[in-house]
Image 1 (tube, protein in one colour):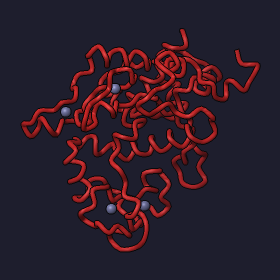
Image 2 (cartoon, helix red, strand yellow; image 1 turned 30 degrees about the vertical axis):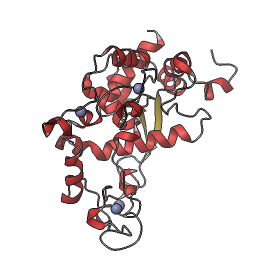
Image 3 (spheres, rainbow, N blue to C red; image 1 turned 45 degrees about the horizontal axis):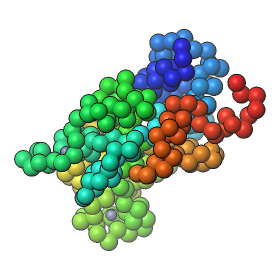
Image 4 (cartoon, rainbow, N blue to C red; image 1 turned 90 degrees about the vertical axis):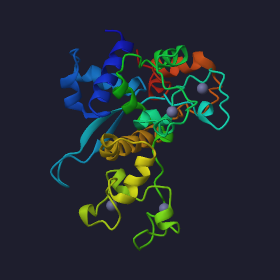
Length: 279
Ligand SMILES: [Zn+2]
Ligand SMILES: [Zn+2]
Ligand SMILES: [Zn+2]
Ligand SMILES: [Zn+2]
């Protein structure tokens, strides 16, 4: 099986499973038989996956699990969705309404017009999906990939709420704050206080839920937010730390389409380049 289709298969299996799977389970679910060495090499070298260590079930003494996450430089085009849409289409990013990805466009829901595209099958979007090697994903799988990779899709967490005492931490906006009041360590899977934490671990409390519903998020999406934020945290952590290759982003895409394609489909010039024995 060619590498590109193998990468496509692993991406799909991961996205169908909520964006992440522990390594043995991923191997079990692949339709193609792949030795663990070959799988490890693929994960390491193709630049489309992140392997993160997470505490295993069974408390502090448990062996950490190695979890594989689907990573992608695919984003929604922000230039197109700005107050003056001005993208000429060379962005290699999706022209798609952010609120549609949330579940229901808030403009259409209130009987207004939305000037953003609600279709994935425009020429532009189809070519972007192909460029990123994800044109085989279902809509839900694609949304999962976008949520855990595009930071613009995730509502901001209030940093002030996460400092200081009192029911709103040090947030001076208190109930009026537009950002989410939720424990950031919980979202990183690292809150050591658990259920006795003084900060909220709950997206569905009335304060947070109101903000999320205003964005048009379905209750199904709200219930998946903890794992989405955690996946996003692990992906961001791993892709910015040891590798010298910055994640391609920003509306410019100055290196042009060809450069983008090499990054996306082939192996990145990260750790692979440093090894002269790599074939
Ligand atoms: Zn664009
Ligand atoms: Zn819309
Ligand atoms: Zn706040
Ligand atoms: Zn907490």
